[in-house]
Image 1 (cartoon, rainbow, N blue to C red):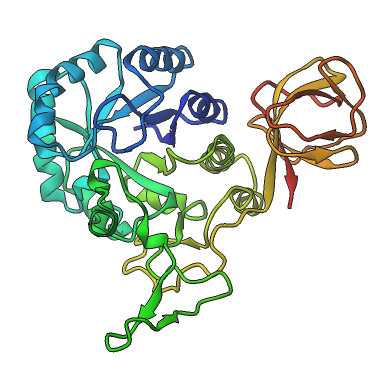
Image 2 (tube, helix red, strand yellow):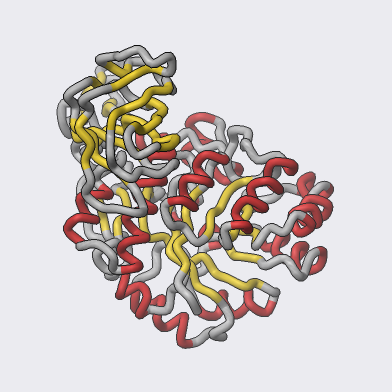
Length: 395
């Protein structure tokens, strides 16, 4: 089977970004049961537009239908699944056993990918899902490389294996957490997690309820339950050897810049088209917590919560809209000034830089700064930049 790089697409901009920077496929939520409480940008109408856009590029779109279903959900599900099939979705990502069975009965031609939230971590379960009609298993994040290899050896070769390779990890088993529902009345298993594992906490002793004692970690407070971020870019070959063919990047709620940066790095890692040292630096250019290898090498290494919270080594300055060989038209995303040196993030080049020596607004007036969000500007440059490339400034 061919290797697949699978990136998140929380909206149409992120979908286009992911595909431009090298994703073979994207996953996104439609208007129903998509495991994100906030309304998705993808109605059925523009979901079809997104799928058509991807298909023109020879790429795929998988739609998440992975919320845990309630009785009332099954009234609308059959029609929804048929609609997804009619607009040529390349697959659905499902966690609920009843939804998997319904999909096999209602739209057997629509490929079913069993979500990581189904917690499939053994070959017996994988074979059972395969017999139910599943085409792919998104492996539980708690599996080691040895366990994945054994599962691969004891399942049909036609059953595809997908695994997360980068991004945030939930502190609960396969993301099934009740803390949010208990503390905030928001059910994470229905897409409404308040992320209380990342809140800051103080300690209260029972006999002194009015005396709050801080739990010291650093000057920013403590998030004692918050996990580190997963990073596998330096051992992708081992994941391939274990039998995984689809590498999934977490982050439907992350920014387009995050999607571009991480997708670009992993694309080049899969293709062996850039040095690993450069790619390691690249992924640190997007927002992240301290990294971890997760469970891939067995029992997860006991590490304290990341002391500095989120960090990144570069700031998203602008997206390129076009170039005439002498000037680059850009859309500003964060303030920058004349004299700044901006790095080019592009699937077509590595390590290019642009010094901002001359800059004009849309009326042709010379300006010294780009202070306004989404302001359209022109920058003097002879670089061969393409629409979709990104300019960033090192922190």
